[in-house]
Length: 323
Image (tube, rainbow, N blue to C red; front, side, top):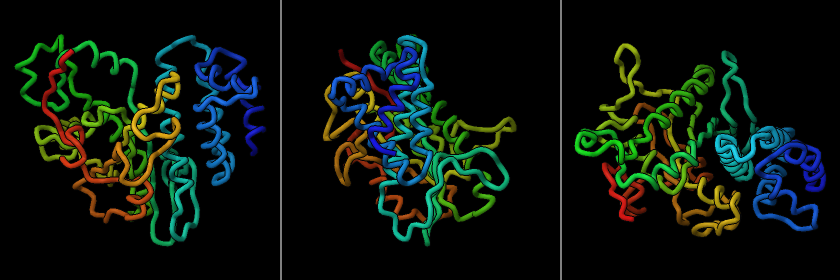
C-alpha cells in the first residue's frame, strides 16, 4: 500500500464525505502540501501495513469512522485514543525483535473472542499488548478549574473542599486493568508464560496513573488497594504482568491543534528515543511471577519510576495549583 494509495483512500472516505476533525489536516495534500499530523498518521499506517497486511487499513477505517458530529469532544477524545493505539502498535512493529516469528493484530485466544491490540512472538518470547488512553478534554479543563488535586485516594479528602478539588483518576485506571485482565485471560490459559502488558498513554500529568497504581494508601498494585470484587476480595489483575505508562497524549493533542510539539518530539506520533525526556515507565504487577522481558524494555524504552526521573514520576498525595 503506497502513500498515494492511502491518500486517495482518505479523500474517498468519510474524513472528506462527512464532518471530521482531521479533514483540515489531510486537506493539505490537495494543495501539494503536507500537514505534520497527516504525515505522522500515514507513515505509521504504512509501517503497520507492511508488518501486518490489512492492519494499517483497519486503523484508517477506525479514524474515518469517527465522524459527523461537529466539534463533539467525545469524538475528539476517541480520535486521540485511536492515535495513541496507532503510536504503540507502530512502535511495536518497527522494533527489531530478536528471532521474530510473527506479529498478530487483534488476535483471538482459543477460548475467548476478546483480544488485545497485538501479540509478538519470537523464539524466546510471547508478548501481548493492550493499549488504553483516558478521556482528555474534560479532565484537562477540570484541572484548570480546580485549585486543588488529590492524585491518590486517601483520608486527605476529608480536609479539602471537594467542590474545588480534582479527585483521583484511579477508577479509570482500574477500569483499564479490569478490561486488560479480561482480554489477557484466554491467552494466559493457552500459554501461562505469555507476558501481558497494558500500555497506558496519558498526558503530561503522568503522576495520576502512577499514583493510582502505586500509592501506598490505596494503589491498585498494593495490598491496600481500593479495588475489590462484590465479595470484598482484593482484585489482583493476575493476567496483567506489567503496566507501561507514557506521556504521548500531549504531542498527539498538540499535533491536532497546530501547536508546537513539547520536549524533543519530532512529529506528533514520535515515540521518542532511549533515555530521552519525557521518560516512559513500567510498573510490574507484584502478583506476576514472570521475569520482565528485556526486549520489551528495549522496545518501549521503559524505566522504573523513581525520584531521579522527576517529581511527576512518583505517587503524589495532594497538589495545590498556584494561578
